Length: 358
Image (cartoon, rainbow, N blue to C red; front, side, top):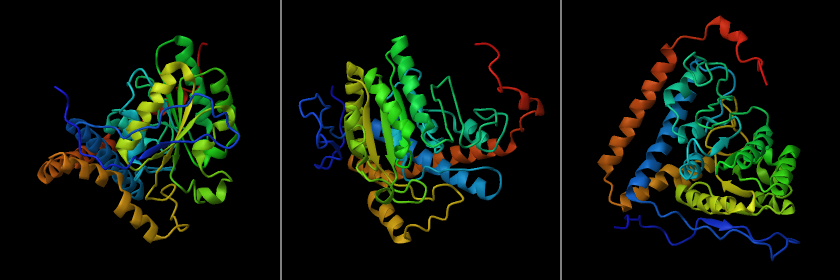
């Protein structure tokens, strides 16, 4: 029996990039993506994951304000559909993920326990990096989540290395390397593009274009602000996606996986998304108006979008409210765990500093 699918709007949410001027039009290219047709159960799962990320990040912001989280803290509020849409298509334990310092959402989307993520934020021994990484430098070999990197764009070349490892080991895995519109102007990104295409590495480069990098709009900082075109000179095809719609994101990811797993080499996905908060907790975001942010919340919020699909699929408001309450409880328990767990022993200062053997 075929699984029921959700009613969908007729307009496509993801589009394959047309070849850039001067590009080889006869080159094979991925198919134009279509929105993912999710079952009711899948939609519920997407909703739960996205609300978990939203509530987790809101709580992290509160703990930062109370001084329980130190250093820098970059929240993912508004961008939830990207991590959830992409990573729902991956195989945990097989496919690898690497990202920059706005990393909490990607870990939650890969099924990592919110308690140990929150404990890492508060610098506790129970944290996923034993309290030594904090917000920006989380890591889990077990889950094939390779950071959390504080240097802008550094994760892209490391992601190419992960893609090389998948190909070398012939393990069937794919690497997803996330970076932002600001990092898209870093030189090391294009060195990684060149090598990835030359060696036909199984890697999906994902630009999370939240429009402002740190505090400058993408059209003021990038001479080519259609970032899905950035791979064309390396023969890497690009797809621009509505990153505020989880079903558009998942559909584009399915097409990207077909391309990469077919031995065609890398592909570039530009996710047009938006962050509601500042670049970090220390950013008042005065470079944009409150009206602009509110308009995005009112018209393009990724969680409200999935909620509409759920209602169309026959999920009641009471059921949705129950899910919300359960997630708030989960996040509250994670925060309590993070506040009450012990700090690392002083001896931990001397561990994980050097690799003892090669």
